[in-house]
Length: 407
Image (cartoon, rainbow, N blue to C red):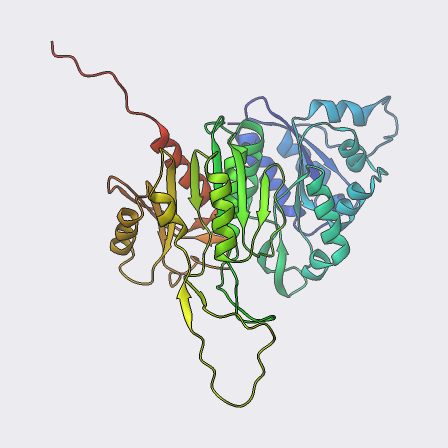
């Protein structure tokens, strides 16, 4: 898969550096050329000899090595690389790159390269969530640097939280996406919705749901990576604004419908991954409602069914819907597929472990218009997004006009 691709594997001073050995081994197995560049702190956690053995190349640790004639070593490495992968990436290296500091071999190579740079943060949760670190990450994202968010779990300090190096399968898949991603959606425009909506009750309260937006954002990033011109309409989430696509933030179901109508005419595909509120208060109070020791009743009215409205006048567009069902998932999803004239529906059950809201994984079933059912196992939402778009591509392909000829 990565044959003849040149990858610099940057290793910095974090406990997850021991996982870099496996990353290197797997990159080599995929036939990539790997040169390891280590910071001095990184060499405290795993030896250069280990990485030299695995990479089959000299490990670079010094900007000015002794007893060697080196003129522009950092430039040579920077121009050689098709990708610079830093795993683990500490708060220190992220801060250096964001500030334009180049005081060691790794930061100097990063400053010199025109190739993609992929950073995989790994650190204590408090360090990762520090507003300075988050500001540096966002700054680099805005400049086109790529990141893979750390996972949640046991940390080296003995606590549990967000900061673990991302799963190696995710890292390797992102490397492949960057270097050899198929562009099977080039020339297509995809409109994607994500996240929850918020329906106001009064000036400070609203009705909403637990959607994190992660599934919709993963779909948007995958669509962009595969060459599609992507428009993402998102309800309120805690996710970073994705780069390289049109992005519109909305709050209510009504606002989302307006944006969908606005951009639908230029889209070939609509994927409604948003968890749109089914009901909204009929009357929105102009001031904060006071608690007066008595019961309060809210009169609710249904919000507009965006997919159903779109399905009434498809005009050749491919429509993909999502359904969250707690019972009879397949049968209920088939009903929605027919009712809304969808081409594909993605259904999941939040009671299934690892599926649903607020997690990085999902367990879904794909059902197309012809009734074909494909049940997918537990997998990261990024991989689920790939599977969904693989299905979308297959649905876009026109059947062959050639007919079997009788002899």
